Length: 274
Image 1 (cartoon, rainbow, N blue to C red):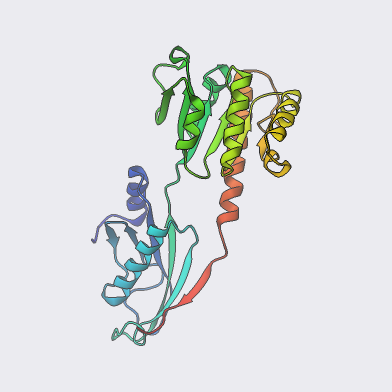
Image 2 (image 1 turned 180 degrees about the vertical axis):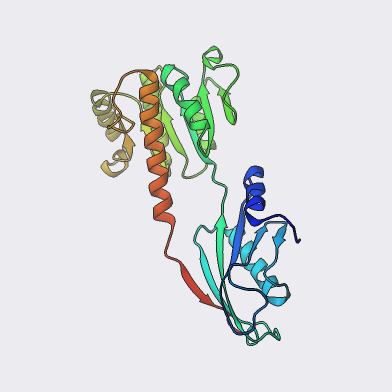
């Protein structure tokens, strides 16, 4: 689909709808090619906008982009096409395309407890690229209305919610009940696939928990993944909002590091003749 709107406006449309897409740019051109360097198009799962010249080149580019979307690929990719040799186009030149996935990331975060700190924290998380589930057994503790995009879960069995979370989820445990905190911690560590796990409490609390959890079979490596006390140590203060800002900052820092680790070096692929 062609459009008279610019690529930035079209990309903003994808972002507003929460749909991933791939931005394709003609990175280099040699000889006779359909479009000049800098030409762009956007490809979503079911739609495409703008054009890099049509023909077999564009058909193959759309195919590659949708393969990347289906695989959830984060890594940008350069691919060089010899138009005559590999695609049978009469232009005869060489075009290099840059594929940049624009993925929508709603990080799954589950917050246990609806006390003062959680009530300060959840609105901060809701303003980040997070899909927040907020769990407590006391419906009266939740604010009305909830922050946009936050799912409230009222249950007498909060530990059961852990099994419903996807791999790599972020867990923040800050309930009013220390025995419940221990059971939640045990269940989260037993899953062993959390992306981040923060537990509210002092070093003394964590020392007691660590001893009991070790007795339940959790090894030192697994226990070391728990952040307790949680939050950026540079952010001092004991007010609920101060603690919440420290925790939100740590979440941001953590998913930022994960994103850096996931971004592998750009790779160049030369299209082979079909």
